[in-house]
Length: 208
Length: 209
Image 1: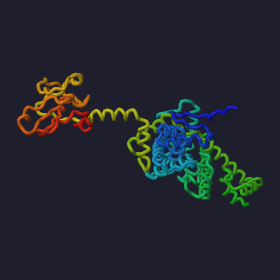
Image 2 (image 1 turned 90 degrees about the horizontal axis):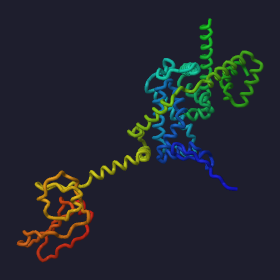
Image 3 (image 1 turned 90 degrees about the vertical axis):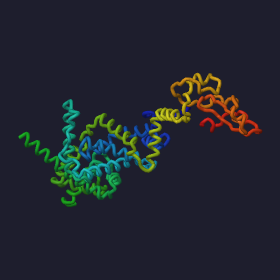
């Protein structure tokens, strides 16, 4: 029986193993290559994680421009501190922690409530179809809902319910105790429930 | 379990964030308590609404702009930090190796030694003529031509071409070598009675005279 070599994945010129055949995940391989100075691997690392980073930053800060600026800063910090990242460490957790810290710094620096004034429309890219219009409407409602939360609760809720982390993982990302995080999540869910009730009431009044 | 305690636990119950024993207690209470069940439905609905929210409407342009900005800031040194400078250097070298090589080549060409020209001396002949010409001691009579980069030894120094006439009368003999470069002439002042130096291949130091 002939042995078949483990399939390799060439991503943007950076060759990585496809799975754990050699004990290294594709992402870990990219991280390792980026640490060694492979520019294409670092670029690929951004490509692989940008939606996650931008999405989290957007939900925490509430605006496209803010999210883009924050994502830039996140990757600069990743680049700066990649040498400290230990092999085997949870890269996504590390990335989330950096993103949350960057968003906190941004909110503090601007000395304003992150989602003040509600969602920021995107005049450059108007929705084309009804489906997109509905999607944009729902996205704006989400931002409005998140804007009702204090920043710590918002971070905890987004990480738990939108990013799907466990409360223990959220606690690690936020540098808090799990019990504290569970309290923040409970409070945030209660506020979101209140928001949804108000939204439904407003819709009912409009119909009436 | 009282309704007050259940009410407090319900936000975590809907997300299964309670330990199994408390989950079971709350579930048991909900079976029998209509108001608490109603609250649980509302919380579950709002959580479902949240989870079903669309992804951020980021375009590929947003991502591309962001990545470009990151690289730009890395190149300008904004990403510098402990260990990052070396990594930045490696990354940038890796991505622009050819450019760097070309730049170095230009620098090397420009850094070739410029030999001060004596007043009144003419510029060297064009490269082709120098390569073909036999070294002579008559560059002074050549017509002026546009300046060219100095030519160093091409085949080593030539044999002595002309002992200086002035040295014949004095106690010091003057021996001159004209190199392939009309701007470079080697002159030995030898005391009479001493052997003249033999011609030898050019050393590195001589090349950069």
